[in-house]
Length: 419
Image (cartoon, rainbow, N blue to C red; front, side, top):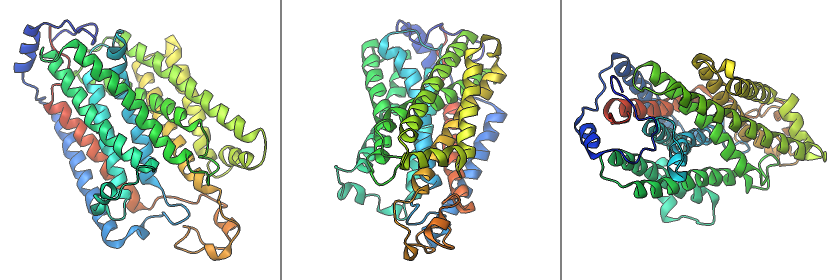
């Protein structure tokens, strides 16, 4: 908001109806050349991704680097990552309202809309991962409610709808058309759904016994903690950027509170990671092979980038002298990149150690990307690396998310109400 004062607390349910009516009649469109350029660039990248997706549909999934023995790749990695990113906005917004505590100074609607944009990307990545997306209706007609995949489809769809309802309720509450009690009830439901959607996504992996790296009860809480890290980091980076651009007028104290929260979330996530590594590696056996693969094998660069980046993020966020906005944005980006590396480790690592015996007949161009030599030879390096087509399609889906977010900034009343 430019030129208007902010309420010191976005949990102020006592906003007058006069302020609501003034906000309702105010123009929501933002006239910004930079924002228009961002919308245009996002649209162009999205169209390029759409063209590449049609190429994938016409030529088949063989154009990707995914094969029978490593059947998930960049699309599902991105899906996990953006589901996590979507958590931050909804949780940062809903926790203060649900618990009746102080909020973060007028960032609530922007935070929720960032969650909506990330959820759109997550759903889009699932669609492009399907070989025949036009048969998606069959998932509902022939659904298996005993499958975690079906649970995730139901919860993720509910999550997107509820995020939109929650954003609408906040806008209406500012206009005096939704009561504080109703908004709090929606906040509680949104918070529970946010935790549930990340738990169900984790169960897709952890309930599969055939992959050593996935089959752990810790995966669901670990997904939630990682989602809190990258989601909070995203909100903080977006808020600092919008504050610098003049879109939001957020007090520095609220940004510092977000930084402290991010630092705490990072430490909890690193603690979970350490517990998992110790449990896997200490008894020896297959678990020790997983730890060796992460710390000194093909996935070691991702592992050490995550550890070093997240430790640096925690140091910046928890050290008062370092809490300057430039460093806080750097810390946020390190946390986001670190959680993406965690997702790469999880997905690729689950396929890296084969659950088949050394069966030469199983090695061919349709079963594994690198099919030269024996099965052991094929798994000597990374079993999967995305093709340019996959990277282009993924960028197109991500651009769709950016487009949704930028259009929201331009046309929706996401800024706090004026007094």
